[in-house]
Length: 156
Ligand code: AMP
Image 1 (cartoon, rainbow, N blue to C red):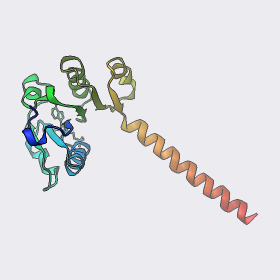
Image 2 (image 1 turned 45 degrees about the vertical axis):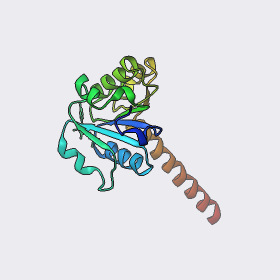
Image 3 (image 1 turned 90 degrees about the vertical axis):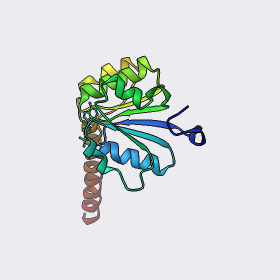
Image 4 (image 1 turned 120 degrees about the vertical axis):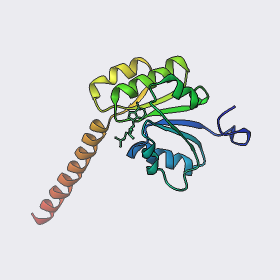
């Protein structure tokens, strides 16, 4: 049984690791979408970032500690998202989720893009803020270049 009781049993159960700006926003969104969500953070004050309407669960503790993950019933999770501000912690939790608990969908934030190969090896999806930001900036610049070129053409 999932940690939300019988009535919630058919909903996707997502465990989010790290209740920072990204983790809290994600947990709020998943809760708003009516999913089962549980969020872990080692600092209990971090849960203040959750919205008053957040309907999920919280667990205080270091997510690299197996006992904390067991308390969160990670073995029942459909999805695990590791978004602490610590690449090592994200790698460790993501590997535990994949290898020990055989969770199919594991997503981890990665500050250091060079570590992506570790995740690929373990079939873990990654999001890398540095790469995403670079792509977005590139898109904005391309748009600006296009509109400058268009306005110069119009003047000619
Ligand atoms: P942010 O940088 O705003 O995305 O916040 C990252 C969050 O991850 C903070 O709230 C940290 O307390 C939390 N965090 C960092 N390491 C761990 C860990 N090993 N276990 C649980 N939470 C963590």
